[in-house]
Image 1 (cartoon, rainbow, N blue to C red):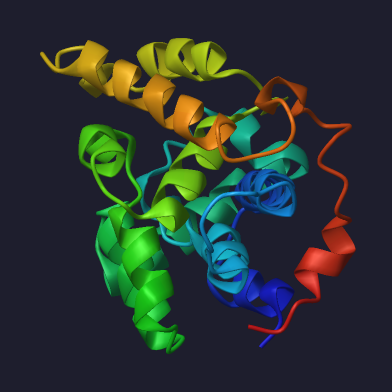
Image 2 (cartoon, rainbow, N blue to C red; image 1 turned 180 degrees about the vertical axis):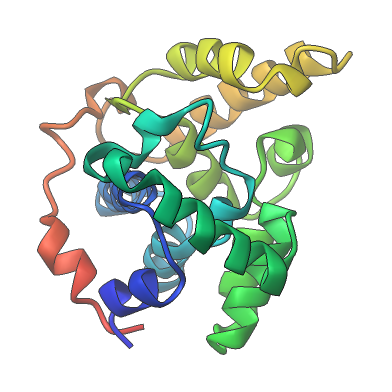
Length: 213
């Protein structure tokens, strides 16, 4: 099944499609410049393309209708699609994604990477030896609603849009862990991670959407 067909089948809103494609481009930028120990580039690409498949179940379309992009005018339709997804997969986005990947018969390695990827698990990710997980988490953190940005940009975005993290006593520990993950990745690529932007991540959307998974 093509990635575009998966996105259509599981009611992925346009903003979320853009997000997953951009995260994939950042992942490919890193893996194309990788000089560290061997990593599974196929797992990396697959995981990035599907890492947020279940996120529609948690969206607040009333508060953030702009996330629908050109589909804002069809908000009521997307709210109905959201209800269908919640009824089938529940309202936990991580669990919904895991259930969808199982339904698609994804390999255990990709499911494991996607299921473990979470900002709230940043300290555990830092302390792991799983480069696939570190790269996916870091790439996800470099993509904001308006495009690519720095880690500090993303931290400010988390504080603004995800207030549940502001009450966590370990928030600064999570930020420090992410900065250290960035340092680790920087030490294993032959290019500055600061050069990651919309110009440097050059893969075409059409090529990614036509990939068979």
